[in-house]
Length: 422
Length: 190
Image: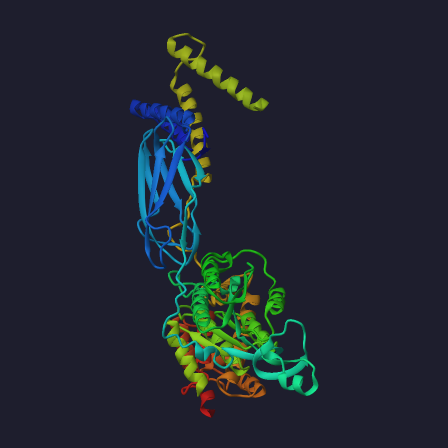
């Protein structure tokens, strides 16, 4: 990098020089001619202006690389000039991850830097759930006159990983959410259990306890008693991560997808604690599927998934998405008796149709809907009405809906449960 | 370098050399008379003004950095409707956007009459036609009912500057919000 690009900052000075000279000649005013001569010197300087070879070392330190949500993390950016020439005008803008907001101090630096010298910029970001990688730092160097400028991007790998604990809030009345179906459900599959199903011929390896001794005494044949197999309910948490779901009431607020993932992670933990087997799926361009299971390993896997899977990132996805294909794929993956908890802001009609279709295929669907609407604009007021109508439509078609406003999720659940039990 | 530019360069170099020569006292048949100087100055002024003019057409070419401190901005729900209202004020997109606005509001009013007002779908359509679904004549008119707005109210609207499409859409939305609540006429049935 030597010349950079022309900023056009001094373009037109040549015109001024000529005009000054001409006026000087007309009016016989030597000072004007002198000024024109000065202009010629500046023009000559601008003509030869160049930017020295820029060689910078950029280091970034985080005060805590694995913070909890809402923690403030101090970021220190250290820039060292490793080149042999002084950089007179150095501007640095750090590539803060798009999902992180800077709470304090600008994430930039403007300075002159002698060879070997180091400049430091410090700012604070507020951590949110997810894995956030810093983007390239933009380095802008200008010569002292500002005639030429160069811009390049230096990447320094830094990652902030914020994985919230999957601790269910103690008073989360989730039982009400699934009690109708959850716990141990009996199936028509023969196997071990409590309720008698049938008697079949003895096969080698059947447990002695289950041999029907009465029949053995009566007829001399060996037979095995078969019971109806019991199985814990499997619940799949489906999070709406379509681009349409990436909405927020204002710039500062959490997006609907972030709240949906929060709701899903809380529900995951609570359901797992109550003995259900729980799975996770994303309904969006980025594929994500965690088959229903239980146990500590599963909990750890889910925790990592919620925090770091790109599907659950707070930034809108940009891949192509074919919703009907995604619904079909989701249906294939869901066991026939699986219940679905669908977390969606319901800001468009497709979310409603997904919930209704899953319900129609025989899955018990509960929709947890974080409310992202506001009343700040005319369109926003209409969006609120539309969402309200969608919730009513869903409720009418027998889908349980939890409308989650600004209150804590537990409060919304309790209120919804009170409505259901009436 | 094109031929013309080379020629100009040659002329420039010769003129500069000749100028220095004249100053040094070499007579080239040119005297530094007022007329000659005036001619040179006029040429310089002309060219200078040309350069200045060129400056006015070029913009500064400098790096513009974004706003990395801010979180990524996601739209607020309903921003598409706001966009429609804006394009309904534009010259080329006016009719299509206007139609979208009215159609959408009408569909929502009908849905609200059914879901919140407890009306049958046919009844809701009839109410929208007659304007009986709301007590706001502006809203009723906006959704196609032939209700006349009283002259006094019309004058007042006109004078207050609240007769734009956005204002009428807002009044319609407010009327839809009232459906099914105690203060709307459609809610009396409940």
